[in-house]
Image (cartoon, rainbow, N blue to C red):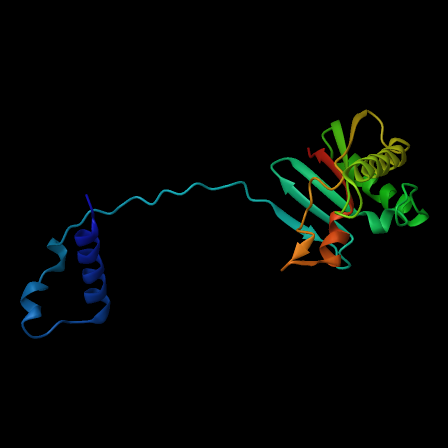
Amino acid sequence: MSRFPERLAVLAVAVALTAGPVTGPAAVAWADPVDVTAEVADVVATVEDITAEVESLDGTESESKQGEQVTVALTSDVLFALDKAVLTAKAKARLRQIAGRIQAESAGGVIKIEGHTDDQGSDAYNRVLSLKRAQAVRQALQGTLSGVTFQVRGFGKSRPKLPNFVDGKPSEENRAKNRRVEIVFTAK
């Protein structure tokens, strides 16, 4: 059964109250708006988990938090040379900073390190490359973090952060953000 007439009556009362006094023949019908009653429908909506992401000004690092889970994503371009899985000197310094944060903020337990690539190359090649890169990050973090367990995975191009194509054209900016290693830990 539709509630359209009831909603229309409520809307009319709201308009009449905000529009000021009513004059003429309609004044008799609206003389006492206090006696007007109408059913108010409950508005029910599902709220999905909200995840805010903060990105560095240069776009090479981002952080998101969902509940107690913190994800730090570093673009592979800042960590590795093209098609390589050997960390650069800058990457090692950056990972030391992140390790300090993890030590200060982590509740311990498992730290996930997940490698990702863009859509260039074969699935098999990208899975291997993403795994090797995640393993390189683990190795760098193991030297500075103790009392944690590492879980390392390489997803290749199967979990892009952003679409590799926009309006049917390749997006180099999105591809760069898809080439990343994510470090996931539980905050205190």
